[in-house]
Image 1 (cartoon, rainbow, N blue to C red):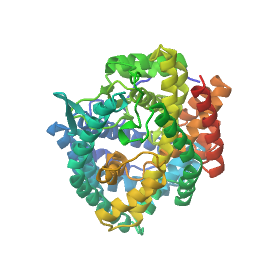
Image 2: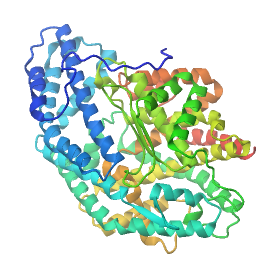
Image 3: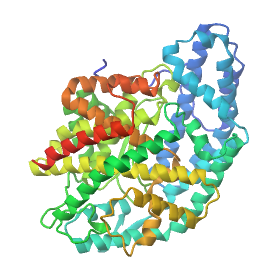
Image 4: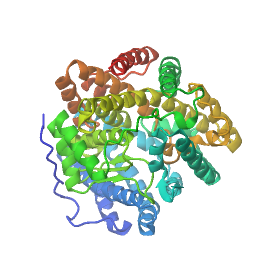
Amino acid sequence: MNETAKISKPERHFLPADFKVDTWEALQPYFEDLKNRKIESKATLEAWLKDMSELEAVISEDASWRQINMTCDTTNKAYEDAFTYFCMEIEPKMKPYFFDLNKKLLDNPYTQELDKGQYFPYLRSVDNAIKLYREENIPIQAELSVLAQQYGAISGKMSIEMDGNEYTLQQAAKFLQKPDRELREKVFRKVAERRLQDKDELNTLFDKLLAGRQQVAKNAGFDNYRDYKFRELARFDYTPEDCFAFQDAVREHIVPLQRMLVEHRKQKLALDVMRPWDTDAEPAGTEPLHPFETGKELSDKSIEVFKDLRPYFGQCLEIMMDMQRLDLESRKGKAPGGYNCPLAETGVPFIFMNAAGTIGDVITMMHEGGHAVHSFLSHDLPLSAFKEYPMEIAELASMSMELFSMEHWDVFFKDKKELQRAKLEEMERIISVLPWIATIDKFQHWLYTNPGHTVAQREEQWISILNEFSTGITDWSGFEEYRKNFWQKQLHLFEVPFYYIEYGIAQLGAIAMWRQYRNNKQEALNNYMNALGLGYTKTLKELYAAAGIKFDFSPAYIKELGTFVKGALDEVMGQ
């Protein structure tokens, strides 16, 4: 197993070394070459695939940088224009070529001679893409890409004023952990009021996205966008019915654990009534955890944690820092959220987040760092397509890293009691995120199987689903309007529809990885690296098996893993 995180940009053989994606006219000759080239042997087919892979990697990295630049500075018109140009003028012209190239690959007799063990997931995805392709969807999908990015621009402008200082909503969240209840309420009210200012604009944007997505599905011969999206996301290993079973199991086995934790916090705060500004709070005399001050301190300490866990992991982050591929601190004009963006040609990814000095930021960094390690481990696979792994394994990489790394969080928390609190917060997050995932997933199923619904119907359904997965302990009176629009804070609904159940599947997998790690650390880390190094050359079930766990989110399995987490939680709470 490779234990040194060396990574290098491969030498180009098909495109000139200095080629940049500026115009479609400059790109088109390379597509024409691939489309018209004769493939008369297995060797020429493999050479053709490598050239197509190189072209895909160059284009993918260029598109990624356009998006990275725009999220780092949503106020920069040039960045927005560059992204929009790619979506409207380059990507639509590539799609018919990729359709032709996919057909050429599947129609070629030498494709049958390729290694089935390695190529099966790729060829299955190619076949799926061909079946879904509709030329009339190209301009609609281009418009949808541009529309989806408006969410970041709208959200990036949101801020509140406190004591003469301006804070992004991400920065303001740290006040909600303070012991001062009056301060928490004041901040919560300001955030709620600020979000509600844009609720109509976000509803209008979402209605446009819904209409466009439904049209794409209809053009492809589907009754609704849910069924289309399941196919487009290549969900070969599970169905909508499996998602419903996941939702039911979370409601039955996980929500009671969450209720126990909320009650515990309510008692710790000595409250008669729990309000929305109390859910993350600490009792009087206990300041919120403050693990770092600056983005530089966060990256330095994260490298130390990763090195302690396994030197390879720390080397990955060191390389990223040296190449300036970390943008960690929150600031006005920066899009919300956090992500790790793989960069297909150079192989060294980019981590983006909005750190404000909280324990949540540490968890986000561990999470995105896990994604980054995945990028490093899969970089040497011979084709770009082999690195297009599904989100269910990508999120397993990130969520497992959160749990593995906990053992070394003393780098951030020198005080044992603070370390205990940090671990408890992570375990609380594991439990609370599953009901939220079930909420968002069930909401998406409703949204896209009920096209043409009104805003009022959407709000009513959202509240119904939200209540189904809520503990019922927190009193939201006076904030009914805010709660009806609470879904708008979830960027996935706007930008990456139906990408959310993957978090639930992967969270279960990560709990299973953590259980394996607690039994045998080195074996678990070896399995983790082996599975991630396979990219997408195996099916999801095979990748999970390589990691030493089951691809399973049945009620019985969820109950089993919930019992394990409850035991780990009791250990920490008893310390």
